[in-house]
Image (cartoon, rainbow, N blue to C red; front, side, top):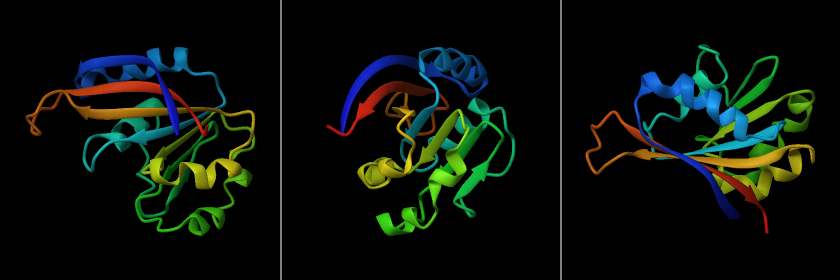
Length: 148
């Protein structure tokens, strides 16, 4: 996977997320695939909820959660590419503006064929803002990605 940094946001508090999401949407060429990358508990689901302005339950147990404009996937429990193919993502992505995927980085090459060609591809890296894992501040980096 090749990636190119587009923008970063440093020392972000949870209360800053609506502003970050609004600003990030200006950088995206929709429809957009967005892989959310970060360790367990870093805030991927929280960011997705704010970005989509949807306070519904995480798709962790159902794998997929759908809104009129977006599909949110959580591949944490996915083991193989075939598991993703069985989801028939293409059926869900028709007329969607955003496709947010948690835990999708390792499966990127395996599922991009299921994403319509009209989608631009991005990765959002979320990390603690310093070595203190209890710190509530995060750094967000937006990358454009490709399978070159």
